[in-house]
Length: 362
Picture 1 (tube, rainbow, N blue to C red):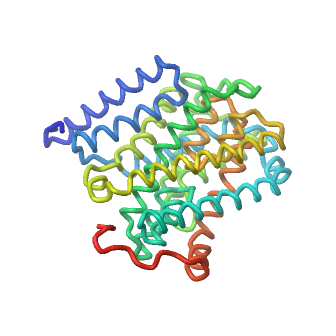
Picture 2 (tube, rainbow, N blue to C red):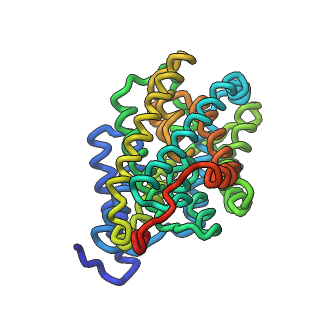
């Protein structure tokens, strides 16, 4: 293990330097979403190998969500809502199948992995990892197990979809809007974009809305762009910083203590991750065939990751963002709003492993 100084400013300086080093490496390797992967890898190394205890300041992460939302809005083509309605039967079917697979993985972890039923299912649900951990904690479920499963899967999915999207042929998506890739952007565009990003500080407090810090600026930005009211601009430097902050948010959650407490679950968790991504690939093949989509768009639409990371990777991979967002948004709201209720129903109707040996969840 590496011994880090107790000074948090020094730890942050070393973490930023490591992030920059890994970011540069991924750029050289031509990996999509290199800042995202660089931040995530640096965070995991810092916490698990060096014992760092750093966390993203909450306002910084919320603002990064807002910036991601605005950036996504600039990439949405007009008529996205018509696209969502047009494909709603298929979106709903894929959502139901994805949730069925997730519950099946939770059941398998309970039966053969020795994980408590409620923790196994909450840990397997795709969508907002943070929301699942919070809900689990409020319901008295072992949130350490849920956190390990959720964040391991999120990290695994980010890596998997990034590299798979690099291997698959890209779609014929239109090139990015000039305002998006502009290094500076016009004054009014920047001011409006920064105002929408600042809204995230308020919308993130809406407890009833999952990912409110991202969704509200994204929806407002989509209306502004879609109706031609104004153009938005996200400078390239701010976009890179957004990727890095979101990556760090995932990586810094992998603490040495968490892994030590539940290390026995890692093989089962990794196996379930592989199985879920593989099932997502099968669903993606069906979506690609039915809608005549390019493989990258279909894969990112069905991947069991968080909405902001999947959409950012979609943009970096030149996928059809509107389709990816349609699938991911419907699943997000379904999981967060109805997931706990469905879980309670299944806990009563499905046979679960009744006893877990004492100490296995400690």
